[in-house]
Length: 49
Image (cartoon, rainbow, N blue to C red):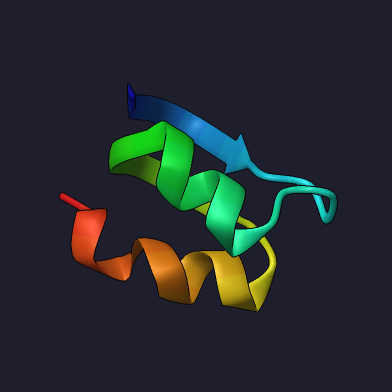
């Protein structure tokens, strides 16, 4: 699993499903802006640092 730590802009495109995001992303820490489909953002809320 991947731990995302971003300074600036983090973007997940529309072809990333909530299931794919949950299967590959362990945690998300963004100092800046985080753009992703609403369903993906909602799925990742418990993994945001």
